Length: 243
Image (cartoon, rainbow, N blue to C red; front, top):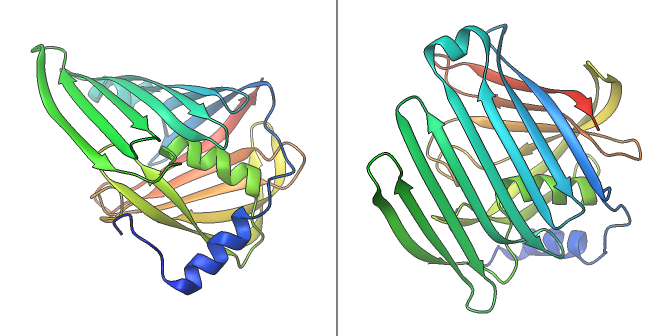
């Protein structure tokens, strides 16, 4: 839904969750590597590096058979204020012949996000716009980091302010249940969350997004799954390495 004041019931839950500062703090530096699987094949690799709660870098590239058909090399960088409040993001997307640069500047004083997307191959502006945002808003990757900090118990429903620079929403997150998740780095007791960002909320594409976060002291995002219509299928990212 568009960014606006939540109904009073949701607002009470939202306020209760955010009234307490998270006791857990992220490591001073951390690098997480994920392996992506699509239709039972190795589809790609994702690396995420964080520096406390100040910056995040992510690299995504297709691999194996999928890369033979779709060559993707994307690099993302974001900077934050305390609380994972976004300051600026930059995405360099190289997908086949498509080569785009997308920059977003989040102005907390003006409560505006300024979005600029350029076609690097043609040296042309594709989209430029400004939208209203709250004083503190997360990009999607920072929203995941914020969820790690809060780690709400199963049964809790909360909302996070999220923006990609083109749209700002109060994204609902449901803490659903505890599950055991096996990954290349071990087996974890984790909480499964569903984040409502797709199907017209923040992104138009139909689908469902799930995240599993471990309940140990590291609060690792051990698995991420995007379920899309049958003709596309499901993509699962599993944690493969922690540094």
